[in-house]
Length: 178
Image 1 (cartoon, rainbow, N blue to C red):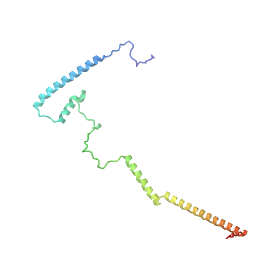
Image 2: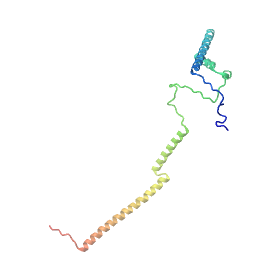
Image 3: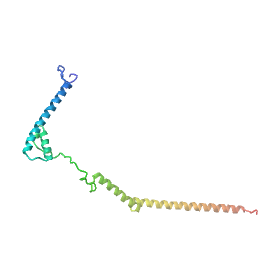
Image 4: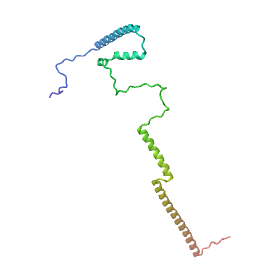
């Protein structure tokens, strides 16, 4: 298979390019044709409007839109039901204070926060299973600490008594020199 495959252009053909001057000339000719068409259309419209009653602005814009259609669009007038037309809203028409519909995610997030708050209130009141387990654990720890403090106090008193008994045995009495 050749290097470029069949995609490439034929080698023997000569390519032609349009010069910028030609493009400018074509653009000018097209603009002149449009102006002439508009002038002719305006002259026709002037003669027709003298005979008819003046139309409103919305009817004029619809008429212009129908004139600009190309090809088959002018023959068939079908509206696409799936097409969503953008509606312009005025600032005065906007309802800022009215109830706003929340999205599913926003609703779920709010419900989640409320559930968490309810759980924390019940937890602080000691009504949840976890709170009951925590309180029981705290009670056990308090008892252990009280017992440890009691034992420490007893050991300290016993040590003091032992020191006092040892001092009495040796007969060391403090004599005052005064």
